[in-house]
Image 1 (tube, rainbow, N blue to C red):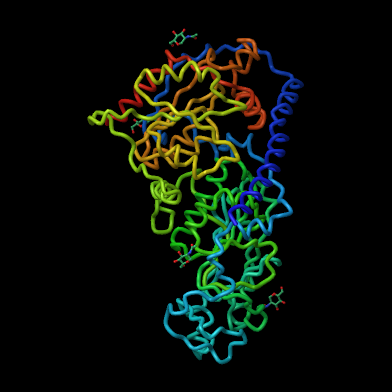
Image 2: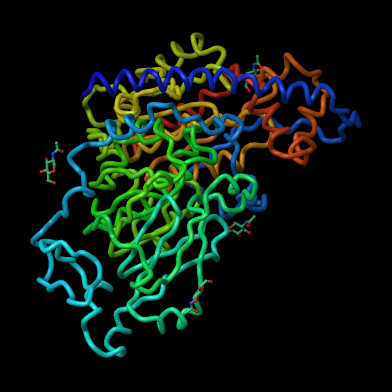
Length: 541
Ligand SMILES: *[C@@H]1O[C@H](CO)[C@@H](O)[C@H](O)[C@H]1NC(C)=O
Ligand SMILES: *[C@@H]1O[C@H](CO)[C@@H](O)[C@H](O)[C@H]1NC(C)=O
Ligand SMILES: *[C@@H]1O[C@H](CO)[C@@H](O)[C@H](O)[C@H]1NC(C)=O
Ligand SMILES: *[C@@H]1O[C@H](CO)[C@@H](O)[C@H](O)[C@H]1NC(C)=O
């Protein structure tokens, strides 16, 4: 079976590679657009800002002079997002094989002995497996309770929240029937009057937390939630004793940052409360995603993952959550999360999922003689550290053991997570690879190198604040013009240096096309060195 997975894996990775090749030609489009763009050549009055070293120490920056950048702009790494990766023909096989076969909740009713023994209602038209005993009172149990008044107290109107700017979510409890193919979720009741009670209302959710990106959202199927009388409801083909969460792949998936920010962390927020007793139904399912993140997914759910859009059987649950909750990128806010879990819990969860050993970073000063390990997050195409070979020995001279990691799309997360977890300091130029901080041990130091172009606030928002929220130390270093390869492409007095905001005003594609797409970094070690000394100091604390 392992062999089959591997060969499928390689087939998929090969097709991903082709897509990545196509994708990497995109920066040229930006370049073309820029070449044809009439740059305003007004001479800049502003002097070059003093090349200053920003040490953003544990400052979750509520107290910043810049206004909070609206969340819609907070997607600096979008330029690398792989637009939806086409599904391979082998998709179905692939999914089945990549999911542990242990957990075939569909075929057998699980946990036959859980819950009070409730006899199947006589008037229930649904074939009710004898051995199936719901663990919580649900709508099926009410049917023979007698008076309307008694039944009513068991009926719960779907609880839907459309107020958040990032996601819509409906929480449906009772006798809930899911039919993927027709994209419907029915909250089933025995009496018509309940239906008029909720005004025959339907709710509609696109279950991916990028709501404000309207064009992006159009790609997602709407899921219709509705209250239905049991005599009109489709019969259950499969009973589940678990809850279910329905979400959609797509959007900016394929970019490592977005995989975590838009799906894995929101999925954690929404489903960790079930302690594995939850099944995932995935719309627009992307097999590579399931395969790549199976390590995390199977720690959240004990059950097989269902390809929602194709599913013809009616699945019945006692609770279905349609949509996933998102707080800030890579952050879990205890005040809004079920059971008040936090980003620290997500970090713990991620490390547990990959059985990572190092919980706490090295503490210097204790006479172990061990060197702190510094991981350089390398990048190949843009924002790469051009003079890595030159600076590695200098970093080593300061007393670090240096290792290099390159978080490629095709990386094996198990292996990479172990590498990251073995580090006490991780440094890299702003980019999706820094998302790997989730695997760093507590008290480790994350050093983010900020390229030219006014990305300081974005960098803090994307990685600095989440890292601090997870219990890491954070240092941020803004490069000087001399350290940017944009110097090789534009004259010194160009608006690229003098007025980055003029590019940001043209939209993130334009600004990112230059500053994130065409820029590499040559670190000036003299200037950078104090950051490393600060990191050593932090490891002593
Ligand atoms: C930052 O916080 C300090 C103390 O809370 C306050 O005095 C100062 O005005 C704040 N600065 C900004 C820019 O909000
Ligand atoms: C299958 O599930 C059972 C109980 O849920 C568990 O004890 C067992 O370890 C699982 N087997 C595998 C191969 O995961
Ligand atoms: C609810 O709406 C459907 C279709 O819109 C209609 O057929 C049905 O009679 C309505 N039910 C009630 C109780 O109003
Ligand atoms: C490197 O940084 C130092 C300290 O800021 C500065 O004096 C020096 O000129 C820089 N070197 C280059 C090549 O820019």
